[in-house]
Image (cartoon, rainbow, N blue to C red; front, side, top):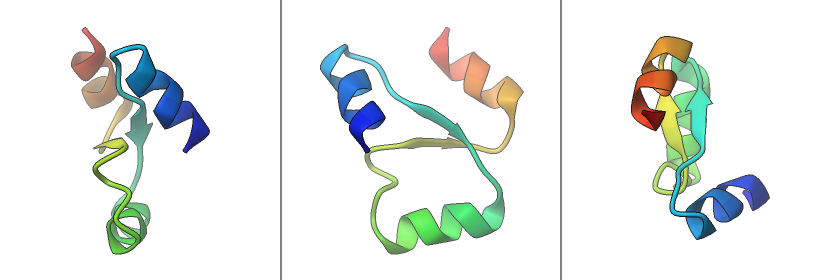
Length: 49
């Protein structure tokens, strides 16, 4: 969460590569609005361009 806050302060987002189980857990604790969840490294790289 500390890294996500730093990214937001610098007008960016923290790209997290995850799988379905981790995504479900993150959404359960309502952190998806702070983290940019991605299904692959390629998707994460596309979102930072």
